[in-house]
Structures are given as structure tokens and as C-alpha cells.
Length: 384
Image (cartoon, rainbow, N blue to C red; front, top):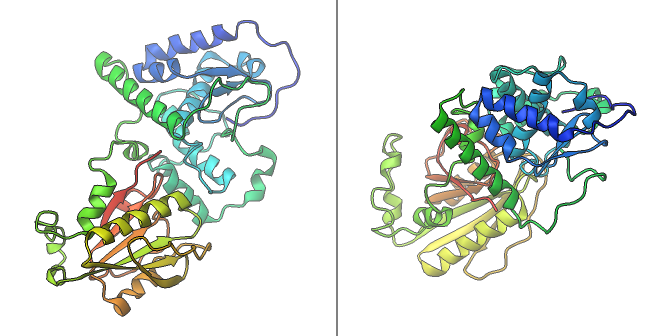
């Protein structure tokens, strides 16, 4: 939580008492909140103006915290704990830092207000945006083209890239994805505690921030194989998803199946996701010789095609601009593929008219919610 730096003053000796009081008060208000705070490592730091988080721990300025009313302290702590629990630090990726922090603040401020806790007078609110996911809010702020210069005096916000220098580092190294998995487990415990006690309400409820945290129903690789590698077992009943749109998969009954693979290279999809998807497609091509595939890279243009074969080298990515899905879908008329697979976070311009070809959107963690895709099926890559 941003704020003006606090001037020099004596650090309260009873930092632990501040936290204990907050935990007790939140326990009386909500078992959900109390469980989250109980599992949060809160460290004192004079380098933060008031409070901040690096996604792993929460950092609180003891001098500034001691000057707050109890309810205000509770709101500040809850603000940072929710940032950490919802992985707002790790989910930023290559996105612009200040705008991402503003988007995450809108989400968290709405949750804190719903809990009946006070917010700072200048805390941003938006009744509509705060019900969305942070990725959707960020995309909205980006399209609104808000003036970045207005925030120059506020620093980069309360989402830190690492711990303050006056806080001892954690012992031992964490494996990739370990922090986010820990917070997912904590959220599950918090919801279970809320359900058992019935005290207060679950502030997240059906919030869209939780949709991305739900366990995958099927392994993404299995879903990709099911989509691309047609066999009587794998694709039995597959075409029922498209009957309502008048799309029938007679083309899939031919001896060969032509797939068009598109990869978003606008900068919002990391290299690991690209490598994972293309390698899996190549594995399918090796197992099913009747499946053929062409690869396109795309930002606001489509680059390719590059024929894909089992074991072939993956062409170096091209692009790096904005995101527009229409150039790839314009290629459908040229290639007449049976299927289209598009790896993207989903934040871009869609065709006005859905294509007459089954489409599978492969979405990395933090991508657009399912309901945001106007057509096709959505497959989500796992985290970590």
C-alpha cells in the first residue's frame, strides 16, 4: 500500500503485539481473513512507506503502522495479504509495473471494502472493474491509455520485485512455482476454515480472481492430444460442441488432418510456454503420421508458415508488437485447415465473424478468462 515515507522515529518494541491484535480482530470478523493472516510471514521494514509485499512475505513499517487506528491497520495488512495470496506479484510477467499495480489495487480494495474495513482516502475504487480478474483490469486500463506521468511521484507501488534490503533473506532457495502453490494451499485452508465456522462471509466468493486458481479438470497435454490426434476413441462425440453453430467435422473423416498452429509473439507469452506447446505438437505429429501442421508466429501480423514435423527445429520467433488475432484467421482461407490451435494470453483483437473451423485457444497462467473468448474451446496450461 503506497503512501508518503514516514519520517524518523522510534520503532515500536512490540511489533509482534501489533500483528497479534490484528489477527485477533480479524478472527472475530472472518475466519477466512484470520487464516490468511495467520499463514503470512510479516516482517518489519523501515524501507517501505507503510506496507508492501514481494509475493512471498509482507513488509510493514512499524513506525507508520503504530500511528494507524486498529481498523486501519487491519485493512492495510489485509490489502497486502490478498496481493500475496492472489499471486499479484508473480502474475505480472512482462506487463508494465505501475499499471499492473493499479489494476491489482482495484481488485484488492474492493475485497477490503467488502469486508467492511476502511480504506485510505485516496484508495482507487471501481465497482465494475474490481469484480474482474487483475489481467482483465490491466487490459482495460491499457486501452483507456491512462497518463503514466500522473503516478511518477508514487514510485512503483506496493508490489515489490524482491525483499527490502533491511529484511534478512529467507533460508534456502524456493523452487519455481513453490510460493504460488503455497498460497493456493493457504487459500484452500482459509475457505475450509470459513466453511467450518460459518463466521463472516467468504470475501472472494465466486470472484473471477479465483477462477484461475481452480484445479485443472484435465491435464492440458491430454486435452491437446484429444483435439489434434483424432481416433475413434479420442474424438468420439467431439463434433457435438459445434453442432449448435452448424459446424460439422466431416473434414476430419479424411485420411489426413491439417492443423494450423499459431503462437502469440507480442511479448505476453513467455518462451517456456511456446517451447512446451510446440514440443507437444511435434510429439503428436510423430505418433500420428496423418496429422500435418503449419506454424505461424503473430503479433499484429502473421509470420510464416513454417511446416512442423516431428523432431524438427523450432523456428525462431518473430514479432514483438501488439496483439491482433485477425491476421492469423485470415490465413484460414489460404490453408483450409481442419483445426486451429492458438497459443495466446487472449488480450487482443478478435475477428468479428467466428471462423468455420474448430479453434482451440491455449492460454498460459494469467490469461483472459474463458468467457472473454468469443468462440472456440479454451485449454489452460498449468502453472509451475
